[in-house]
Length: 114
Length: 107
Image 1 (spheres, rainbow over the protein chains, first blue to last red):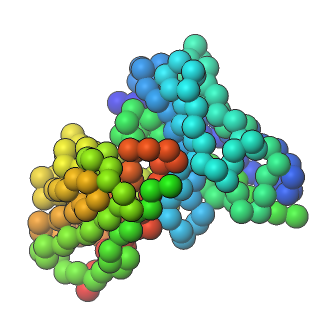
Image 2: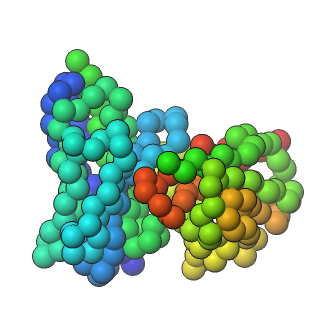
């Protein structure tokens, strides 16, 4: 069965940058759209971005457009989220998901605070 | 943007109860709706896709219905492991959006 493992979260000051990674194993990574979803602890889910199988199509929620960049490396079964100009309101657990949402990682916490 | 309104946001029920959660979209989304279950500190789990198709391995007591703007998730006989938060999610048009969630707690 497929597995997704996120990494790269941590504490960063407002205006700073982080790069999240999601490594896939046991699935045909290059066959799936991949997605980032975030969740403020104790709150609901928010779709952040997704990327087509070959990387040719990307979509973002308005609040991160121009600041976040989703990318993938199919040769390395990897998904990335480059997060720049981070804001306090970006603080959340970030999940990667794929395979039509039947596979999720465990989440990585991003805290933006001075 | 398409808004998804879930109701109720909280419900208290007993083991064995039949429970129905509603998700209303601000505009028609055909059957491009997904339902998730989430337990505290865990990632969401896919229950139903295309509004009514049960994901493999999900118990048959879960069912989904609806199209257009009105959707339901029904649990026919609530089990202890079903006490969790449930989210609907539209995959019809960007930006993709989630409902606000329904927390199901033990009465």
